[in-house]
Image (cartoon, rainbow, N blue to C red; front, side, top):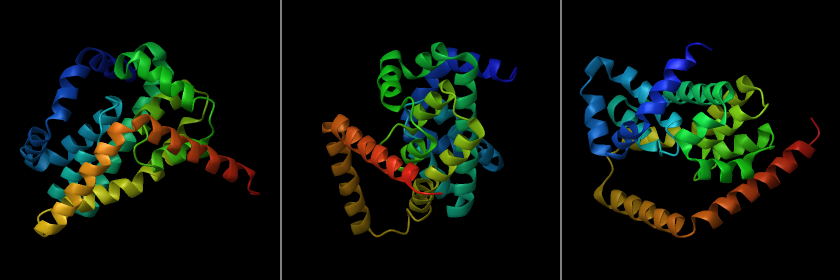
Amino acid sequence: MLALVPIATVLWRWHRPLWDLFNNQRLLSEWVAGFGLLGPLVSIALNAAQVLLAPIPGQFVNVVNGYLYGVWMGVLYSLSGLTLGTALAMGLSRRFGRPLVERLVGAHVLARWDRLLARRGPAFFFLVFLFPLLPDDIACFIIGLSSLPIPRMLLLATLGRLPGLVFACWLGAYATLLPWWAWAMLTGTVALLAWLYLRHQERISNALLALARHLEALITRSPG
């Protein structure tokens, strides 16, 4: 647990500059590639950091990993970093409590999602990690603030994130091979989905959470 102290100190003091790095996608890609043979270690560290610096979207890091290292090695590096970051987020929040989490996430953001996600079971959180557009990074901190067993939740978080991670790495790996019309369709689809989400963010989030609660009820009622 002593190892968590310096990590918490760095996050407390430097979370804003790190957040700015994640927002500059071109700089991030060039920065990782510039490390050469050390790039995979840098990639793992970045994926761990993006979990801790919630609510930063981390899929771009996974696309970069696919582009630089191919699908399966990209998945390996992304998964290693996400698992490390998830374990740290859960461990830090359990060790240092709400003050550190509020510093990283924001008090209002934490209060809203804490109200929506608190007192839910493992099946519900697995669905949060599986579904897109839900705050899976924030869920890691909320799990740490709860009494849920961290090892089990870490496994569920890893499994739930895996499909989206594989798709992002695949997209990065084959980015240069897609024809222009495929990129045009993909870009248009992503732009439309982003516009719909920004315009109806709360409604979409509430619908996905309601679906997760419904599926959780079905899972927990199922025999065995």
